[in-house]
Amino acid sequence: MTSVSVAASAMTAIKKIPTSLPDVFILEPRVFGDERGFFLESYNERVMAEVGIVGRFVQDNHSSSQQNVLRGLHYQIKNLQGKLVRVVEGEILDVIVDLRRSSSTFGKWEGVRLSGENKRMLWIPPGFAHGFRVVSERAQVLYKATGYYSPEDERTVAWNDPDLNIEWGLNGTLPIVSQKDRNGVAFRAAETFE
Picture 1 (cartoon, one colour):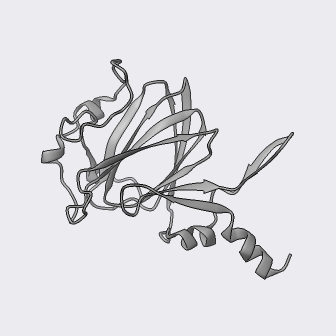
Picture 2 (cartoon, one colour):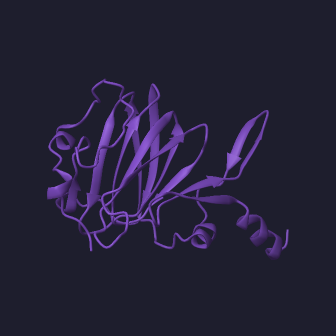
């Protein structure tokens, strides 16, 4: 294969799908499947740069959770993190909240279904709070981060904040939430970005 055909095939390796929040988008990788299973390219620096992800990833995280676990809404006020999130097993409702005061969508949220079946990824740049609820019996969530985890800079917005009014799809059931997330602050009191 020549270098020209490699570059051409790399450009078709992923589909970029916009969301209602500026700079947040879904990535749908090209999946090659047959009777043996499937193959996909989950990360390629050149392809990511072509779709607008140019930051360097410094940390990979793996979260395993049972049904109705709700994690978030997390962000770091300093030592900012962009996140590339995907699910390798199960399904989650991934939620993003715009915390950039200068944005036309400040205080707005979007929910995206990510699953091992749809193989989609979600790019969340710095300036957004992030959380998810496990929809399936279990879920394995992987995400790459552009900044190191910094406990002193981590902030949590209450997952059930009435101003945000996020539709988590709980249908009257209570989620399983950590103590840290139970202590999340109200959106109106949250530290935000310019």
